[in-house]
Length: 428
Ligand SMILES: *Cc1c(COP(=O)(O)O)cnc(C)c1O
Image (cartoon, rainbow, N blue to C red):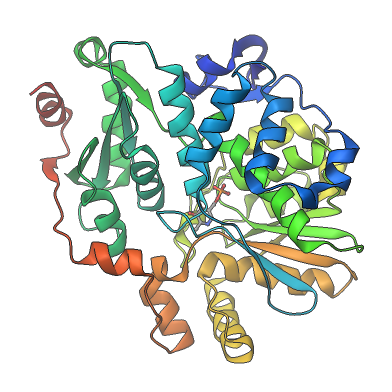
């Protein structure tokens, strides 16, 4: 497999480099030079394949001979040991629940696969890899759980003091082992600035074999395509199938577009957002205008300049080609809250705010189409507990895994937001 930078098609690397570097030197995102069509017989007989076998088939075609078959199967089996069920909500609308992994969000799929690939590519290197990651909440939890106990890798997570939820903080600070959490007295931007500066610091880069677990890493995108195949397999419909994807940085939907390119018969994608609606605006107007992000209750999607838009433009260079396959919808907080309550009262299903955006867009899409729809439920509702309980006016049950970590003690390293403090802590 070869990959090029979205900023320069001549800048070509192999998978190992793309995974260990995350971002190209010219700051572009890596894209596969070739997205091969899968054998139509595989798609026709997909019900005979397990999730792991689907993942293997996609990888064998996309990654080619980067990784020998036995090693690849091991990577896949270690990464994906939890289900991704499609659950019907109405006769036309189902949800693909992506929150059954350890951090209860879809980011587990990407983080666990990336951890396995990084460990694989760093094998035989006598120096451990040190992953630095800044988080505003969800990414850190998935990365911490994904890399936990991965041989040859240490993880340092920087999170802003008092600005992540109680459950999120527990997910970052209670694992121990190769996962270390730093509580930074500052905001998310300070955390991100510390990570960026660390990568430029000669002493730190000499002392550590540093890498990042950035969300734009191609190793996080590839596994997110597997569950579109899995959902298609479970749905078994003769009607045209539409996926609605609650989107922030647009990685999840880009992975779905990869699946379609590989031959999965998907009629349309819905790009569903909160008021950070730069992509729905692009789809309706043809102009891309990044904004400063606005805070909403679907805060994992508060992104004003989605990084993966560059990859979408590689797949659909013209506005017409993109609008053929993708339709945009967006919603305000009050609408999201109202729908969470309505769906709970009518069906007993508890949506999280991000999933509620997916559900809303399915309903709106059905007003002018008779298709079958699946929206992605990107996180378990308990990750947004106060907003969800308030919206539906009911207490929700916590999953057992969360009940267990709530009793554990937070272990973190409190630091101020200066680079000097962070650096001296690293070097000690
Ligand atoms: C990260 C995240 C999203 C946004 O996904 P993108 O791939 O960035 O579009 C949506 N919902 C939840 C719960 C998330 O954590």
